[in-house]
Amino acid sequence: MAAADFNSLREYMVKSQLIVRGIKDERVLEAMRKVPRHLFVGDSMLHRAYDDMALSIGEGQTISQPYMVAVMTELLGLEGDEKVLEIGTGSGYQTAIIAELSKEVYTIERIAALAGPAEDRFRSLHYENVHIRVSNGTLGWPGESPFDRIIVTAGTPKVPEPLLQQLADQGILVAPVGDRFSQQLTRFKKTKDKLIEEYHTPCVFVPLVGEYGWEKDSI
Image (tube, one colour):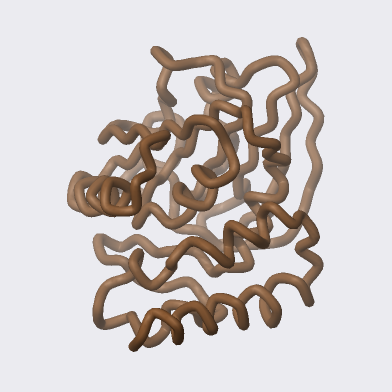
């Protein structure tokens, strides 16, 4: 498929999946128009790269539905100067969208087989503001904290305490919170000693595995 065809598919994706569902942040929409989602899926999924659905990327993980990527990004309220922590790199698509809209992105992936290809994609697309490591995401990245924004791209029974500790004052954290098979996208704003919660769309994500998430043997 030619590059022009992919460009058309991205534009159609933005109009038919995002704008009509209420995504209004122009910077988010522009990033979704720009980032080549087809480069973040395997060859066998290339023809479905811009479909309105999550897709398998192997290792029991998925690349999120474009609408969910846009919703989570919009909830972060990025203005361009933020230092962002992402838990769950996956294919790197959500990372790339955030990299377009923020100053620095620190992303953690627990599965090395996914982290390696994701890092290669960041390099090939010249995302020099992305830093990746293979680690237990529920512990965060304490050596680089505090973070202005934190995004968790896996379902968690509650927000891991280390992530809340690493969130800057006035910072925002977005995560799907709930049980193993059903969560609610939740936005947290940290104000001194208080945590303000906002509940958004129901969703289903793969589980957040780690010390402060789900135990691997229980999923």
